[in-house]
Amino acid sequence: MTTDQIILFSLFALVFAMLLWGKYRYDMVAFAALMAGVVLGVVPTKDAFSGFGHPATLVVALVLIVSAGLVRSGAVFLITRTMIDATRSLGAHITLMGAIGGVLSAFMNNVAALALLMPVDIQTARKAGRAPGLSLMPLSFATILGGMVTLIGTPPNIIIATIREDSLGEPFQMFDFAPVGGVTAIAGLIFVALIGWRLIPQKTGVHQSGDPMEDYAEYIAELTVPEGSKLIGKRLRELYEDADKNDVAILGLVRDGKRRYGTGQNSVLAADDALVLEATPDALDEFRAALNLNFADESREARLRAEGEGLTVVEVVVTDQSRINGKTAQSVGLSWRQRTVLMGISRQGRRVKQQVRKTPVQTGDILLLLVPQDSAADVTEWLGCLPLADRGLSVTADEKVWMAIGFFAAAVAAASLGLIYLPIALGIVVIAFVLTKIIPLSEVYTHIEWPVVVLLGSMIPLGAALETSGGTELIAGSLVSLTDGLPSWMVLTVLMVVTMTLSDVLNNTATTIVAAPVGIQMAQSLGVNPDPFLMAVAVAASCAFLTPIGHKNNTLILGPGGYGFGDYWRMGLPLEILVVAVSIPAILVFWPL
Image 1 (cartoon, rainbow, N blue to C red):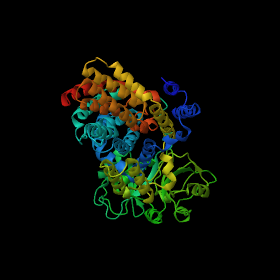
Image 2 (cartoon, helix red, strand yellow):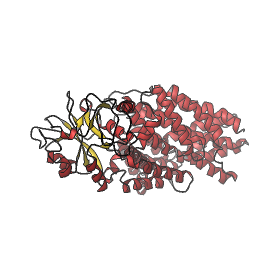
Image 3 (cartoon, one colour):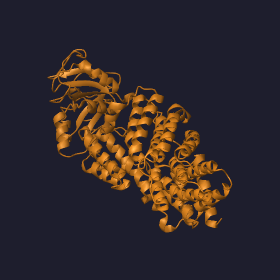
Image 4 (cartoon, one colour):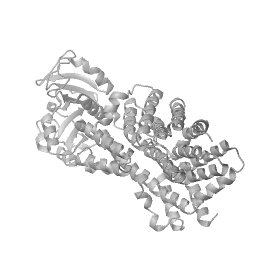
């Protein structure tokens, strides 16, 4: 073993010990290891920051932006409304989401499949009042499992097919992976749905503490029925089911400036009717998008959109010195002076009975405002109100939902067919989202989990250095010696276990490139068919469930799920054991030695 190899193996051991300890944040540990590698001379200075431009790092960053665009366009709400029910039990929800994720990832890159479903899962968790970490890891594992079924589902399958063509003269075809990958994926999905999710540690204080503004989150607001709406002619009570689904309470109806008595539940809806609602900002926006309702100040909101302004939602508290204190939004000219729409008023303990724009505002009221992008501070100062901490509120651009889905679907299709490289396809989607104002330019970078980017950018050069120094070849040589004299099926099992372990530490693409030739060499030394060994490498390289760095999907959920580095193995270890136990017999049946 060379000095460089000793240093690199020691660095990896130290990094994983520190990450499992958990005292220091994972990105700082990884970056410190990278700097140590450069100082000790095992990572070339010119390659020190190559990981930050690596496709894996870029894909993670771009996927997070694309996911935010799908949320803002209403695509996530569309899926949530049609397929997901927040009232389901956690087990039933994980089963459904896992099945959807597995099927999608078989026919699209599994990173893209997770990008589409992750915001849906987070939204459903919010509505159900549970931590997203309870369901994000099962969803990630399900999309990884589904990717094994087809050639395009995951990069290791594509690499295996290419290596087979170079070595044996013919590549694997689109569905050659389906028999083994399908059986293994089904077994894994059943485990995740019935047992796996119960093994996730339930932490307190991580994504479970709730919204600090929860006690003040309910707003009295108005949404109007637009001309040509499908709601015209329906009775108000027919909207109750949709309101319940979106956590919205319908308090009444305003027509021609007059409030109907009671809730007016038997009133037949007409154009320009205003629904008086009580809801949180997110629920209010989701209800508006679901029923295609308008904001109460429709003309002002329409002009704002026509001017091409990005819109954002802010919350402010009214003080004794506020300009609007004791006055209405209409009387102070909020709309025409500041191009701002009053969406709702939160008055703790008392309901606002008049029309929102004509309701005198009081000290202590919290106002929900729709303002032009980047004008929030100016509007708040003009009103003399105090801004609340940013809770990431935004207005859904539901009129662009199919545009956003179209951009995303076209990019995924082009990448899946090999017409364009996946990071480039996702980059084009981000540009399209910005140009069409699905995502405001000022928000592009706010959706990236920067600690995750630093983690990947730091670990990739270290992994490359391990390969360049001959460390991976050393592992491969040891593997050949270790399996000398063993039966073929045991050799196959050892190859799977070692490949799976490498994939948990290195990028799965690099693992495949190293392990596939080793598998072919082992098969030739045994005088057996190399295809079973290539299939074993394909399955093992994809199934990286022990760490957040083994697969990009696991890295994507690290921040949003509130996970620690050592949380993955709890469900991942038994799942990897199950994968080996199921896939080895399947390989021997479908790809005989």
